[in-house]
Length: 324
Length: 246
Ligand SMILES: Cc1cc2nc3c(=O)[nH]c(=O)nc-3n(C[C@H](O)[C@H](O)[C@H](O)COP(=O)(O)OP(=O)(O)OC[C@H]3O[C@@H](n4cnc5c(N)ncnc54)[C@H](O)[C@@H]3O)c2cc1C
Image 1 (cartoon, each protein chain N blue to C red):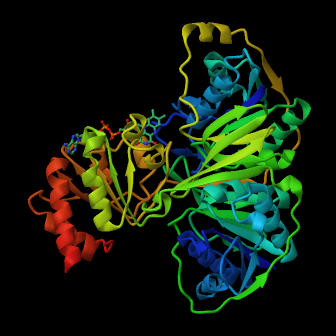
Image 2: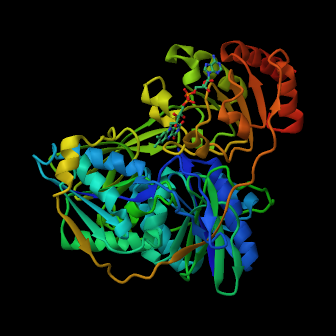
Image 3: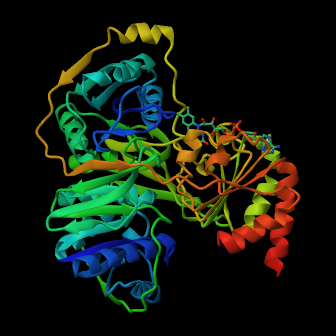
């Protein structure tokens, strides 16, 4: 028996969420009295992969081949499923990222395994019963889900489980899995990355602004605040609908769900659909001129006033703080 | 082009979410149901790709009990040509995906669209499961889709950017914002929907693999600490020493 963890990378660098799934997988393995094995696909150096040892991974299976450098949904799923079979994995863990969402259902289907997407805790295991919590109704509820299959697939949201260093070392092994030509049904033609930007789903700090900012020309101060904090920028739905900001910044029930350590909402009223995407943030700061704005009810800290006055002051105060 | 759009019947986004029966079931009392917002995007795209039926057909399928029919009729009013309801409680994603895959096996389609996820159970599972069951390629979170001569070009969301992916039909795509603007039914559509075919099928036997058996609501937050706008340094101090986030 083992726990298999799928590790994602960006251009050969392990993602932050990769260490989170490693820790999650390791903690389940400890619970079950077994070991956590990792699997990574792509051009990644052994030095980079051995870092996983520090998060409790004993062995890393590495698949590297020219035709698997970019994401191939079906082929990646085949490889992960065959590693799970070869290593007798009873649980497969992935990150609930855009790629993870494409992979986990396929792996679950191949293994006839029940899938819990977006788990929020370690499972409770006793005898044959296996139960894990996940968010439901777009963050408005937490559900406890039992899984009845002998193999289970679990995905966890980025930022929802802390990566913990355990101080071990991992052994890296090449893994050869058969992939068929029919596994190459999708071909990546181009990758466009906003390199100067921090990835929104994985960001520790998010600075978000809404219709209160009046127009796209006023976003310079939002970006400057994000820069000072090393934060990603986000926005409310009407803002991206109006084309003031790209759709990829829209957070909420119909956008991206984020759970950063700090979420700063500027000129956003806090409609229920917006809150659904941000309410699992650890700390929420709201800047709004209207004390009656619903966002204040879920905020930890609030400033009532004009964003055009407050945000520049906040930038100055943070610059002074960072300078010390 | 024959397109199948998978529709999920979900509580309206403004619904207050509560539970009954010792917190083991979602409380449906007073809940308004809608087409899952992402499925509306899929439906709008399907109508656009078939040029409102001039260049193919759009079938919508839902796995649900009779109570879901108003939602299906709404999809017909928006512009789908015909509808299928698999008469069963959608027990879990595995159950639903198997029902849809079975229907596709018996009635081939060029393109199968689903929303990127349903806003009730937030699984993002059905698209890729259906694809895997049928041995088809898929893209789970698409923010752009175009089809030309049996070849699709899809913009796939990735962390901090996008990937442009190509695939030949048949194909399964989970749609997100950017793919199309949801359509609102007009009077003519609503009238026409009354007579469009809605076929009811009995489910195939599938054993669900997961069960939602207990719910709770997230813990409420403490009261907001209000900080005077002339005392911004206090906020910086609190974020540093109390919240420990900077
Ligand atoms: C099906 C559905 C799905 C939806 N999904 C989402 C979603 O995913 N995400 C989302 O965000 N929304 C979503 N919405 C929309 C949501 O209901 C709200 O309309 C939206 O969140 C409001 O955006 P906003 O707060 O930016 O704008 P508004 O509601 O217009 O609020 C602007 C706020 O700015 C404040 N303000 C104005 N001027 C200033 C100033 N100078 N300084 C400080 N504050 C100021 C105002 O007091 C007000 O509170 C959805 C709606 C529906 C129906």
